[in-house]
Image: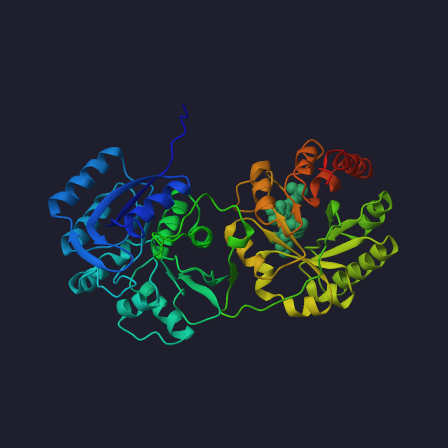
Length: 493
Ligand SMILES: Cc1ncc(COP(=O)(O)OP(=O)(O)O)c(N)n1
Ligand SMILES: Cc1nc(C(=O)O)sc1CCOP(=O)(O)O
Ligand SMILES: [Mg+2]
């Protein structure tokens, strides 16, 4: 018997007895994503795909007893809140949250109306919602709900951004505005909190069976928070679960049916594209296709290229952090000349303008570098592009750019760069490589002679490292051994 404990997620929501939306959709989603679902049923709604027959709010006694029973099980790791059908229900929830021992991540899907137009949340509750907002980790209104909550018309992209900001000013932690009903080519959602704002874009899925989309999204976000993902990662995972659910949606008795989330995200087609502005620019970076990058030393001077390229290394990065002006430029110019002599792929780290000027093979950029880089200029100059990623948010951002390769790090602990990330290990490296299969992957962080066989066995295209080569007693011998180990252990296709 497995002793593994699963995080616990509560769905505090209305029961839709046709199983299309509401609490049943929440429970199925939470379970599919690997948490344990508990329920506090706020109302029993009698409905089917055509109409709402009745909404029966739970009594105060029914709500209190459900909360009491669950409280005895221990506080949840996250709560998804859906339909709040009465003031009593709202107040009991607020009391519970205020008395909780620790702050509980709370995702609020403010279901005001059904898609057929029946009002579910009474006006008096909507008017009192301001009391709940400061306790909300993330709220997920659609455009109509955003307009109703802020009391403003939502007519433009600027309106979406400014009204979402209003909710932040009212005390909500983060806002994700669902753009599913917005008349645009893609389904684009807007995220904002006090530190960040971005858009998540996905192609629209052709299906009539889209009942319960908001329930799936919000409960997937709650589950990701319960699994300790950051809020930015949780909304990306939520959108992936939604896209997967839409792909597996099905009709019920030939009528509009529900989404169906089967598992943790495992398919690249569900990954949204993340942009800082609403528009999604198309870039064309050259493809590495079947070229294997192999051992990929990351070095800080052109002199290292002179030492390493004669060994047969085909990919190398110049990562200069301590030079500026003429000395930086001349280092890059020298490195490009040496790489040409050996016909090697030279990526320049950070300094994309000089990489373009001297026509290096490619550029490597981290996520912060992406804020300032002119990607159109790099792409027009025909340079290859590699982008660092560490989490779902960063992979979704890189996916919007479609670089020539994605880097995954740190695979192991590294002393060469301070970062807030827990090392991925081989298991997560495999996950990323299998998830985003259309990209070549480069592994980086703490890789050395003892670990390189395990990394090579994952089938990544490139294996990047700094210290294992540059701090080795005999760098040339170490690099030669590592190239042999990669050759022995990489999977044959
Ligand atoms: C192959 C490879 N992967 C990751 C990095 C790190 O890039 P970045 O996040 O921009 O950090 P700095 O290297 O600039 O400190 C890399 N350079 N190469
Ligand atoms: C520069 C860098 N970027 C990383 C990332 O995870 O993005 S790890 C890293 C340092 C790699 O050095 P070493 O091989 O000495 O561990
Ligand atoms: Mg950088």
